[in-house]
Image 1: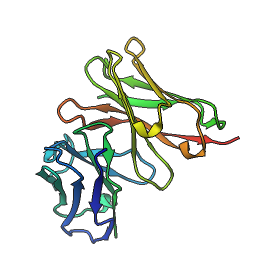
Image 2: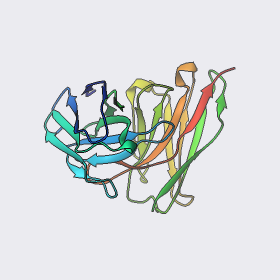
Image 3: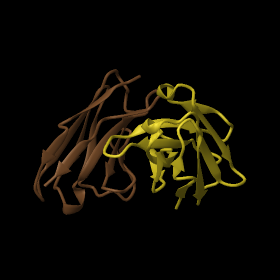
Image 4: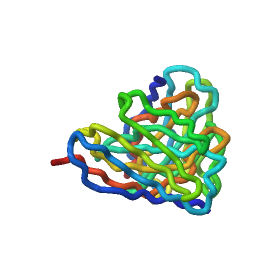
Length: 106
Length: 118
């Protein structure tokens, strides 16, 4: 199985901050990397697919980059509704696996 | 706009089979994979598997052959069966649609808590 790691595991930030979360795959996955946001008690919501493609309806302050095994999610200016947990997921080979999550809190 | 809704028993006894159904609206279900994901309380996401309208399935080996998925396009539903459950299978279960380009999970159900307890 492909193992996914994320760093940091949690971070504290303020409204307006630029936030960067890193995801690393245990082997190369091309661009088969997706990012999700999960708020408490809710289902995850797709933000970025294919490493850098913004999902329809997602604010442009979210962006993704990377390919191969190292990827980054950036929030350019953190908004109050962005305090949540962020997960990366690889869909290069089954079983598709998720990273452990990054908690973004105030 | 596609919508998904999980349904089924919220309480299952140990050693029995967990059965959930996901009802889909706004999509004919004929051109995508459909997936199940679970999340124990306070923990991360685990991919359970996926099913295609042809009947092709792919399951997470970590579940040791206990998973069966099926799909019925005429009812726009797909289902999950997980046999021989234990307390470790207690989780919120989500159904979701796979996108076509990078197999991203682009639409999700709200999730359903299933507790395994006698």
